[in-house]
Length: 212
View 1 (cartoon, rainbow, N blue to C red):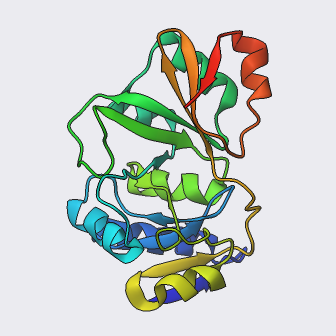
View 2 (view 1 turned 90 degrees about the vertical axis):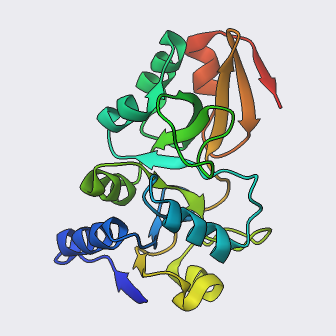
């Protein structure tokens, strides 16, 4: 396992290193706009199982995804006109949307035909996903029931040698995880309150909102 700090003169090499690890079925820890996350390729069943194991996470909980660009979204998900409006207004950002899956995906990232996806405002997260040309998992870097890691030191304390690379970009904002919403019968369902300010969503959509 390697911990590498992000520097101006090593950024491209570090992103390439992270992508090479993911392409070989490995897992990494990387910073997002909220906390540090654990990354594995969305279609690597072995890597997904490894993430599940090191987090000690229940099987019934699925992993959210981060995409690098809209083209990746179009390959994996179907979006209604309302969902497209939300995406155009709110991405990139800390807003995860439950969307209908377009393809058959591993059960660890799909639940009842839906997947949780966001286009992160973290350049590092987007560049890694763009580099591997597919979505990566965005589950928080923590053991189940423990607080998410806000820096590389905390992430290492949880996993030590169980991951292949930790990308150290200092302390993340923390606070709350990404907000999760779903569009259901013309209404916005807030599945999880989080870091995204929903007021901006209310103001331009003017749709009924309810909380799970």
